[in-house]
Image 1 (cartoon, rainbow, N blue to C red):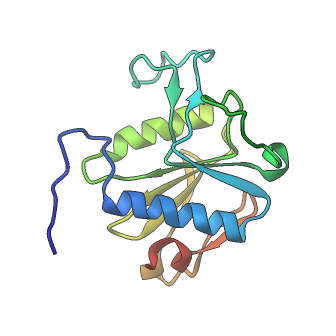
Image 2 (tube, rainbow, N blue to C red):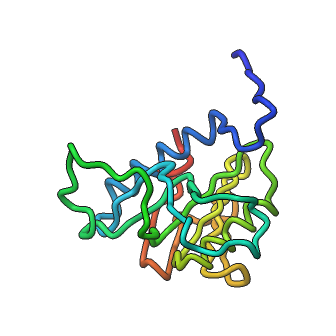
Image 3 (cartoon, rainbow, N blue to C red):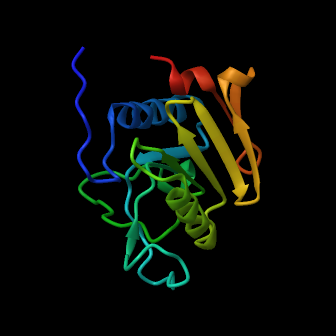
Length: 168
């Protein structure tokens, strides 16, 4: 097996990162009918004052995966499209890439909560850990290594089997 190293870009995705995005999309699409998943969707934050956060100058954020209420976007079809969402999702998921720092991602989660996003998940692919945050100080870790069979998000009433996320 050939291993390819990642570029110097700290946000660049990896094989595991992309694989987990796909796994999450499929799991949500097939098992969680109340929500519609999306990958790398741009959130328009241009009307929000985010100067208190260490994100630099930005007018958009892109969670790795996000969920919107299914009813809200049911029937949304071409030829229309949304380039940047002004409505915030109910769930934002960040998947840690090999060169991303946890503190930078926790700062991003803080911004998501500031924007009104109800729940955030942080996934560490190499450890097969999913941490569900209701706030930065109220969170729970789920991992098959700890005997957990599913991720439970009490805020959004989601139960997602861990094997649908991490198994190939």
